[in-house]
Length: 119
Image 1 (cartoon, rainbow, N blue to C red):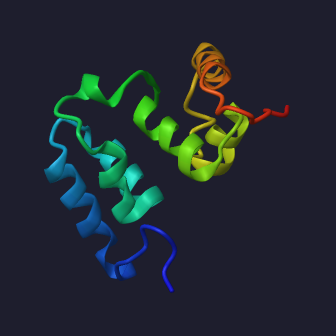
Image 2: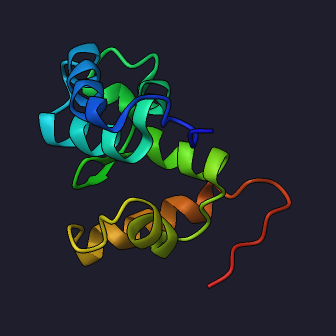
């Protein structure tokens, strides 16, 4: 069985990225490709309802928007900036110290009820 979002053939990966870029034309091509590579067909759901870049929420840098972060917290149980930047998105090298700190602040203020974050 395919993993979530992996319900396509590996040879169709570029098509999935092109389809995402066409569906969300205000998103830059590099971010659309990264989201398609990371989430496959689930990427559309992460961006669902956004009609413009501002509706993706806060931009943390390197194409990481609040809607993706919310998905990571809600659906993939991400709890720390390290988890988001190194294990899940691989964007750790692309964000500056201030951007990483802002991500940590956001995660601290969006903690799901009853969930403790560990460092």
